[in-house]
Image (tube, rainbow, N blue to C red; front, side, top):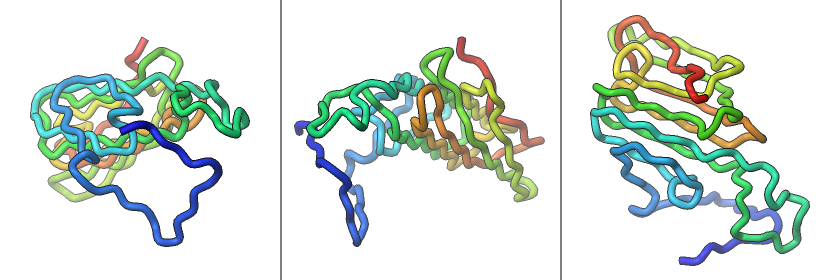
Length: 178
């Protein structure tokens, strides 16, 4: 199906819904996520082994919002693109979500729920955060982990992590991409 668009704001007074098998993308192996194949869908992982998802580089300059009317449907601007990653198994290898380059960073937080006490612990990103690692234990990745990443601004991904953990909870955020 070809790309289509609407000119101007689209308003629904009764909501929108996505349904059907095309809204779930199974990704049990490492992959570079793309707007065309993964944004706005649920990227589902049900393999226990290690997997790395690389977010696309943020492009905030191509075909700006003031370029219209009639902006290019194939422009590379990806602000607002949201990637939802859901793991339905406890990981024995790391589930990693990372940025594509050394300029993009992550801002946001993680809520980890300790499986033994049911206590929730929160972690914030730091200025250089660019990688999320769920290890199936202390940093999350216990069954039913969700990571949501949205291209917020030039060089900035808004992220949120919700997961169970075991042991002493630890931050899933690091600065690993160079």
